[in-house]
Length: 221
Image (cartoon, rainbow, N blue to C red; front, top):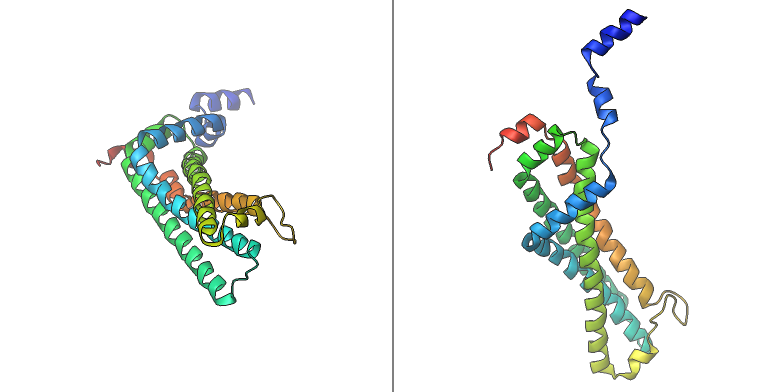
């Protein structure tokens, strides 16, 4: 038994043991992700702009429905179906844009990803880093986009139907006649924007994590 222990110690830890020992904290992934968002602010704003527009349009539709209800009007089914289709297409286009932007980010960061892997970063850490980066962009873009859609459509509804309609709209969590209010729809819009951002980042994150350290370090961009 003693000879077996000495022989194993002379060989050093196995690859599996090393990977189990190295655990970088989530706070470090958050810090790196935030740094990339701020360093590449221009590209981050372009990527976040697609989320902003999609969430703003979705929230404007919710606000328009609430304003119509407050004014005693009901939208017909073809109109609701048309807006639902436009919102769905907008979110699909937004998802494609996020995937494309993050894939370009992965390509630019080949050497850095390789360096991080050589220093002991696990594949799960690389994945978390990209998902957090996408989640941060999605959060800020969805918060501002939802607020913009709410304010713009509220102002438009007040201009068309009078400012009295604003006082009749359901601004809280629940509506007066049942259902949900604008606060609930706002939080739903923000959640959908964040979820879309994170889901769209899965493919780029998997690509970054699947890179071999040696191949990434040899890559010239």
